[in-house]
Length: 111
Image (cartoon, rainbow, N blue to C red; front, side, top):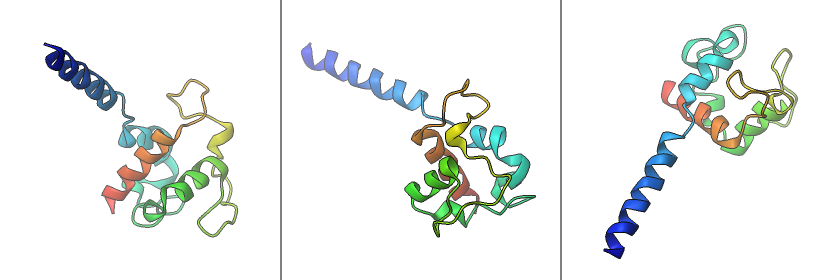
C-alpha cells in the first residue's frame, strides 16, 4: 500500500511539473515574433533559429535578460533587456530561466 501511494504521489508531482512547463512557442509568439519573425527566421531584428538558438543556454539567457550577445557585446537597440521588463503574460515579473530556456528550445526546433 505504501508503494502504491508513493507511486501515485510521484506521478502527480511529475504531471503537475510537466503541465506547468512554459510553452516556448507561445512565449515567442507573444513577445518576440514582431521583431524576429515567424519561427525566428528574422524580420526587423536578426534571425534566431539556427543562430542564437545554438548558443549555450547561459549565453542565450544573458542575451535575453541583459542584452549581451555571444561575443560579450551589447545587443543593438531596440532589443529590450527583459531583466527590467516582463513578458506579456508574466504580470510584471522578470522572465525566469525556464521561460527563456523554453523559447530557446522552440527556436532550436525551427532551424
